[in-house]
Length: 466
Image (tube, rainbow, N blue to C red):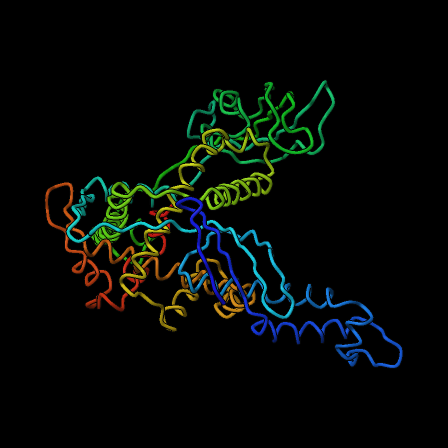
């Protein structure tokens, strides 16, 4: 087989492949067997029709077509490996010549990963947040814990922001009650920011036993987007009462006997979280520094596929929410236009990052051990709430194990970037990532064998990628 490469653009090539007929023999033998199974010829059992009879009865073109359908995709894969290009889209293949008995020729146009060099990343200077834990950090965590153990107490007064109300709701359009737009005994925090516009304003100042109506646009159901009268009937007003910060609260909210012990534990965990954040920030900022140095042209098909995938995921989220599109974006305090604009920039960045990390994976000869793949599946299964063997079977059945391995080695490449950087915090202190690994894991981390996901929590890694 002979392959020639023509560069159509920095991100697209045309392969011209010439294949001697002898190399088609396995596919041709398979084609005769397949056709023999499909045709019926008097005097021959199914699958036993000789090749010469098939050609006499149905023509050699039928066999050649079946042969090429089987052979060309495989030959294309071989050609790609020979010329060392990295396709990022499905190829446009055209058989341009069939010289029966001699050779065939076909072309394949395909988008590829562009050629570029990764600049030296040793000693790249990056700045991360300080890991110093302040009293305010501890107080914030304590307050959050108090909120979880707060109690609701009924009050004989009008509702204000932060209070909880128990209410009945119903909606009417032109005086006609909408059956699916009513609910009883709903508990709601005033000022929480309901997707039902006007609800918070209407509840402010209402007392138990009062009823009020307001006009708004419905956000779900068959009448989503239509204006309706929403009638509120407040059954009760309750205020949130936070527990006192004392030893009794520490015993209620934790395994500790005293408030001081609880505070010390919160301080230690906050420091651990900040150290993990430093690792994540160092890797991401080292990657950002590389991105700024490289101008990487993007294949149109890859960019479109990434944007379309994000749009599809967004449509699914909106559909699953049961809200109208306007209400959905209002809930997340954004607009559809803003989200779509983010898709364009985010998709381009994600593709470039993938290209860079793959280059580092190759140059650093990073691989995946069986144990690393097992650890990945176990951790991901825990996040998803499924059994590891179920997830492993799903990945294998859907040909996704390769994608899992790509994710693992790309995480390793992020780790390589972070470890190669010169890291300081916002206070000017040098940050030793290897010392952080040791403190987090409780043992020394061997750089070559320790994947990034074992050095920093998966949650923080996902936050950085988002």
